[in-house]
Each structure stands twice: as structure tokens, then as C-alpha cells.
Image 1 (cartoon, rainbow, N blue to C red):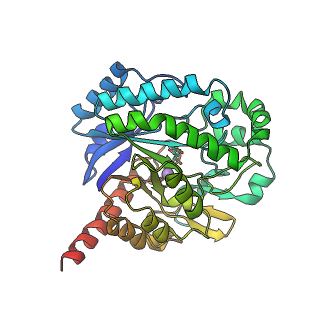
Image 2 (cartoon, rainbow, N blue to C red):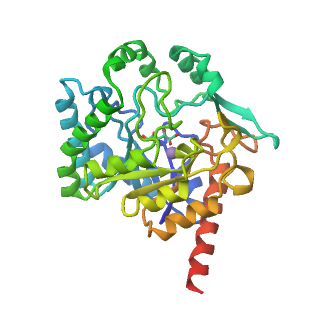
Length: 356
Ligand code: CS2
Ligand code: MN
């Protein structure tokens, strides 16, 4: 595995590349062209400039998170072919620039969903949190308003203001899309992009839906073992793979995370490791990475990744806000650096204990 950190680019991130360079064992960043819109072609020039900036700081681009998929592709609307052509063009340009990992998601309308961005924990840190009761009490437009008021002056992925303008319209369009149709639209998309992925050896890594169940009546399909195995089998190409995000699959306590990892051998191209603390089955908060701070056994998760021979990029996922840092909720420097150090420690111990 390669330890990495997500970085949004110097214009958008409060964390600098030189800070990331000083986290022990972090050699790569997972980045994006944050100001591009879904459906837009990423030019080679911009990709190259991004790479050069990262490399000048002594790091490398280990992958992209995300190249977002246009809603009309998820909806299967008539202009999807033109939009997929653009996606293919972006993949080709990434491949030409020697970038071989792309994380994306196939969630309708909303990316990840949380009901609080700064819940205080007993140690005084603040974290993202979710309660089903709070979601049930909201209409989707209010969800946008409550999230965007709380971003510490940043723009959070999936909650870009221009999405808000279209929420009502999108809900209308999704009325006819159930989970079977969404699966079919995903299959169509994947079948069309696989040739360019084969040509440039690009691993596509779908991110799970978060939380891993339908919200606001919208279908969600990347939620559990059964569905993710269906997804990798329906387009049975090794380039059609998975981002294993423990914090997202873990939102559903029925998901056995180490077992899911083992069942996806050869198809996990990217790993997000994060812990959650459940207060009730429908109320959870994003704890520190350390097992004892939350509800998951992080050793078992990392061990499962080791056991299947996982060799892709891994990153700590959301971190807590600690030590007075003001940053994009979930994406500060300090707690993610602690997470990286902890996961590196688990990995070293596993590697050494296997050799004995
Ligand atoms: C991420 C997602 O911040 C997060 O919660 O895990 O936004 C993820 O980047 C996207 O769903 C991937 O497309
Ligand atoms: Mn994730």
C-alpha cells in the first residue's frame, strides 16, 4: 500500500503540500481539479500543471478523487453519450499524464450526507455526525442550507453551491429512477469507459454511498456486500473496481467490513480508512481513527486489506477538528496526520508479525 492524503489544490485547501510532505510515510496525494464541473473535459495542460505542482513539493499524484459523474449519466438521459465521451476524454488525458487511479461515486443528487459538521465530542474535538431522525425532519433544500452554513468558509465536496440550484429539478427527474435503473445506468457507463481504462491501465474505484442506504427517497446502490459484488461482476474487468471506505460502508452496522474486504480481493484499488462511533444504530459520529475511540476494530480492517494483498493508495478519511484548527470539516491537517501515522503503525506491525 501507499499512504496518501487527500488534497484539494492550493486554491481550495487550508493544508499545504509542504505540510503533507512532513507526515511520516505519506508519499502521495489524492487530488482533483476542484473547479471543474461534472461533464467538463479536463485538459492535459491543467492535469500536467497539477502534477508538476505536487511533484515540486516532493510528492506525487497517486490518484484522482473525484472525476464526478454528471447527473444525466446517472439518470440515463439522452445526452449521456456526449457526457460519457467527455468523461472518456478526461480519462485519456489522465492516462497520458500517467495517472492510473480514479475514484468516483454514483450517488443521485447528494454525495455523502451528514446532519452536523461540528458535533462536540467529550474530548472537546468536533466531528461530522449523522442522525436519521434529523434527516427525517428535513426537506432536501434545508439539508443544503444547513450544511453550507457550516463549512468554515470552504466548499465541501458534493455540496458545491451550484448543485443547490438544481435540487428540486433533480428530484423530479429521479422520480422514475429506481435502484434497478440506476444499476443499469452504471453498467452502461462502465461498459463505455472500460476500453479507455484498458488502454491506459486506469483503475476505476467506485466510492460507496454514504450513508449506505437511500436518503430522501433517492435510490442508492453501492451500499453492501451483495450490491458491490453485483457491481464488480456485471462489468467483469479488473479496471472496474472499488474504493473501500470503512466509514461509509460502516454506516450500516449489518456490513461486516473485514469480510467485505476479503470478498473483493483484486478489485479494491483504493482504501479510505476511518472509524465511526455509534451512539445508537441511527446516530453516529466520526471518531478518531484509533479503534478504542470508536465502534470498529481498525486492526481487523487493515489486516483484511493486508491479507488480500492490497497494494493501492490508502488514506485516512475524515479527521476530527482538533488543536484549534480551522479547515474544511473532516479535512484538517492534524487529525488526518494522526490517522496516517496510526494506520502506518498498524501496517508495520502486521507486516512484521507475518514475517515471524
Ligand atoms: C468522501 C466523498 O469526503 C468524503 O466523504 O469520501 O466525498 C468521496 O470523495 C466521493 O464520494 C467520491 O466521489
Ligand atoms: Mn470515503
